[in-house]
Length: 244
Ligand code: ZN
Ligand code: FE
Image (tube, rainbow, N blue to C red):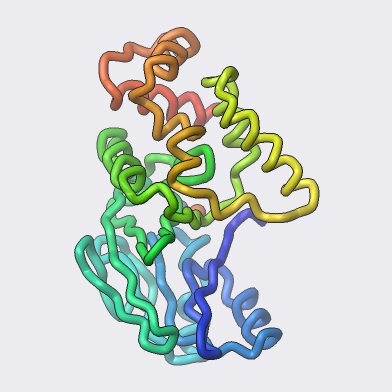
């Protein structure tokens, strides 16, 4: 209900990112006439890899994914620094390690976009399931260091719920208020709020703003967090969001 399966298309070919459901992809391919040429996974969770086996059996395509996550039907293992040539769609992507949600989680970077799976969301971030808060914050910082214009293609439509939490942390943040209004309008029409940009996320996303004094102060006030460094601010926000 809230997973995105992004498709990169060119020359009649399509590459699927995180196909949690094979049938959705098959229906789309039949409707649009594209031929599937590869699958990219960001991490091992079922809602991102559930369609791998069925799609590979049907289309005999390569599956690219993280070296350090257990991915079904994986044909090539990727890690930070690898470059991935997708000949059919004439595109080369760069791989970055962004662990924390899972230990092997990777992101795919193109000219002006990133597929970041469940690490960074619009106005939020993924749960820290396998890594540590410090690891997750370092991954978020890595994403935040991409050029401002980078479009952020995350894997879930969690934006409105993330925004409710973010507004509790920074009620006076005008960029956040504006983004919330725009997102409400989009969601009322059942339109995606994604992609967002790195520039926007740096302005509105509390998890990218752990170094802002007002965010630290709020974390201390609301959650009685012992906030002595950005990691403890991040950690208190992430825990509070879990039960929000
Ligand atoms: Zn996940
Ligand atoms: Fe997910």
